[in-house]
Length: 110
Image 1 (tube, rainbow, N blue to C red):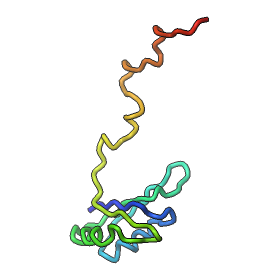
Image 2: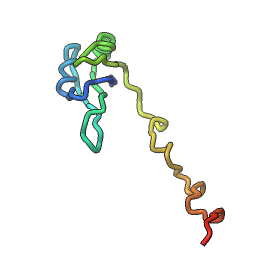
Image 3: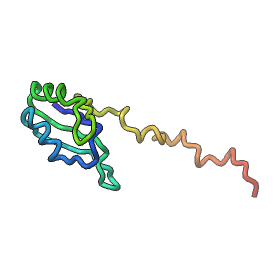
Image 4: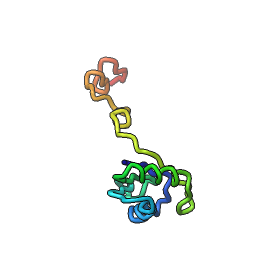
């Protein structure tokens, strides 16, 4: 089961998070999401546990728990969908709607 873990202190690394979740069972993967430019943690990550019962127990007990002076948000991760991809909100992929090269309404005088 893939688990979302949010509101993490920026100093928390993957080993720290793994040790917290291993108290509830076997952890197969841990990923802290980092800024691609600075490399700094974004304050959230994902933990994968193969046993659903262990994962649910971890989610129930860790959601709202304090770790490194921060109240963690822990719940089942949702699958990434097209609508979660923000890049589509900024620019149309349809060039026919792109008016940036349309000079018919250009009011500049030369």
